[in-house]
Length: 90
Length: 116
Length: 329
Length: 104
Image (cartoon, rainbow over all chains, first blue to last red; front, side, top):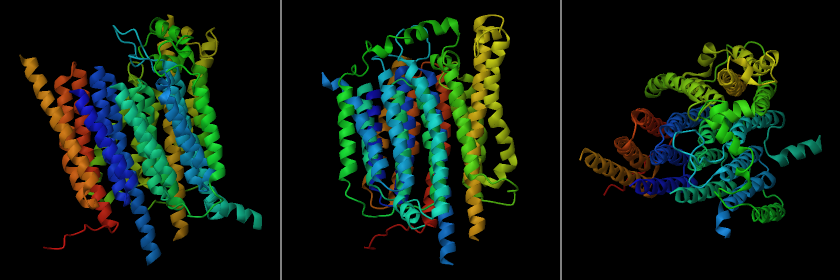
């Protein structure tokens, strides 16, 4: 059963990478990156369940925390750029 | 017989991709990304060398005798943190170059150097 | 299942790497690079390198993405499309180097081969003896902090030096309180609430990783990065000027030096008590107890240095951005 | 008996979660514009996480594992809608507009 879930998550990851490579807008790439991140958390959780080790779940926990920062940082710099553009236009 | 080496070959491919970015592209930020890809592929290389078939993560647990090799893990763990510190240094150099020359393209910088 | 995950993740890594070569938009490159590092980190978990995966997770998706984005904000977003000399020469060099390396791998033992030479020397001793000699379950931590403690001292010093380098390149001395990096995300209420809830959780998790590092994956390097990431999140959501009031750059500079000094002092303490430099056996009343104390202090030093350096680097970038904004106005 | 029921429950959870995950990814891959894509991934992502982590929790051997998985679950249910929300908001602010149908 684990292997079915793993395969499904790997398929999702592949599709997300393809979307991130194709774009077309930057937001699509961020969305795909975000999705890749959550699926990585799940993949690692499944791997640690297969290994039966609680300490490997720490890594998934770390991802769940850090992935959020990545997305928020991207959006923060987007705001920075849109401010710059507003300034350039005015 | 050769199939057992596919991991290393893909690593070499990744490494060469990073190398190609570093030598063929003029944009300094892209060069830094290329260096990072190269570095990550070296890390993958070491970690794959440390894997032992059916081994467990190198944390001692009762009833497990076969562990993967912890030594490459130690070396690579520090390499990652040192890598991000040096990446930060490289990026701050890029920022200073951009302030001095108004560009992060290698060729622009070169022409400005020539003309001055 | 190990092989399935291995092959798929390798494929994903290749796709991302090739896409990065072709991409012109530097922003997209940074995004793809963060995906690349996420994929490589799950790859590390798959190959049993849990500590490496923890580090890569904290560093790759968090800190290096943030730093690269900061650089992009200060430079420009697109690679200039510019016909260079035909790409044949670099391609040729790369092909030759790659062929030589692949030729080199032909002599290597097969992937995951238990009989490979790398597993025969030194390592069996670490695996068999570290449980009794050091007395902590995480072999990686005992090699990192004790058997190869001298290496790690060097690495910590390198991180410290890189922090100093960034400080000299980007830091502005003098007053910078009146600077701000512009509209923060403070106006976004959902983000503010979630950010406020997450920051203490992350700090708690950093402490867990720091002090649980002897039992499971973790240790000073990872904990330092997570702690820095918590402050970076705060700084992103609430503004850099607010974050600076909580932890001042001056305090960070002191912490940077204190961490390395703590590490080195533990070594010197070993010498004073009659052992060698970084020999922890003499620190306690019995060897394993001394090892415990030594590893605890050393990891603490590493954690403090790494956290301070990462945060100081981020603050330097943010300060530069703020100065740029001020000069632009 | 209870173990069998737990097994079956966790299988159902894992399979449904995988199905939701794949449908979200297909949506991300096939839908025509950004807003439909974020809809596809945002709707399925959280439920997929809940189901898969829940399935793993039913299989877990120790309470430590259950507690850690619960932490992940909580974190993801907090962060993933938040980032989807901020992303959509940021896209609107950045001038991206949904493509509307021809109105037929």
